[in-house]
Image (cartoon, rainbow, N blue to C red):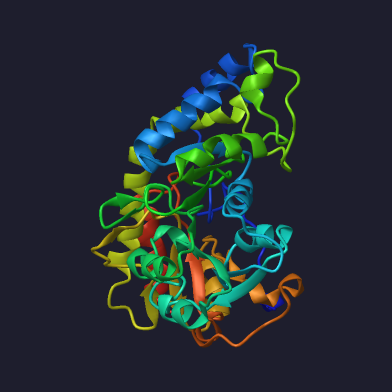
Length: 379
């Protein structure tokens, strides 16, 4: 378990440079007000509108299904991939627990893969050693917004004729070799949680390559009911599959629709903040920015993670200068829920060295300069 000393209380937003801050544009207020005055405040026309815009911008030919959270999107993906009891699924050990908990809902057997030291993403070389005829799917997470080595992962999956499920909760707007994340694999799950690039308060989207699964996905997100048939007055509809209450509301979609108008600016500004860290910390002994200088993929810049020695001391130094930092994510095998720790050499080597620095649109570029200056002054 992480040492208690590394855990620090959150700062008030007025006290210094906070780690995260939601981005909600002013026009979202009018959009939500319009929704609250309308007939539809649950799932309605604005959810459908958001899905259409998302397909055009991100998932392309892949169907986009809006849901209540990124966790919903992942669970729905696992259901559609027909993952069931006893199925082996290879998944990264380093991620938010939301990636792996829905696999437990399906009573699947999670096979944890190690990470790459350079990216903190899943290591395809380790995946190659783990995959076998029992493997039902490969899950990959684009940590911090940096895409995984998708060619290698998809090559392995192709050899075993199994789907790839991308957890892109942190990677909205990222690209791999020119292709938007969301348009590559069989399933891609996105998050619109409070501090993501765009937010619905809490929400998500799943992009599905096989468009024939679209109607099934819509049924499962609504108790297994065919809503379109029901709304036509056909009350004899049977329910044949286990469904959930995983829909997005028009209130949430209203916030996202307003935010989508600002998305290009949000992505560009986040990337500039990240580049400021990369440039500002270049050549500094004992500090490495994760995900810097990749030319074959575009970083969505959700967070900036650095590798440092004596992490606790650096966190204390930053806090003294009114700068928040944290680990944010942890290796999942530290939790009893997943069966206990296993030996994973790369994760073992880095678990006490990674640190997340502030990165969000409320920051100024000068804030990045200040943080880099504090780090370069030593700890």
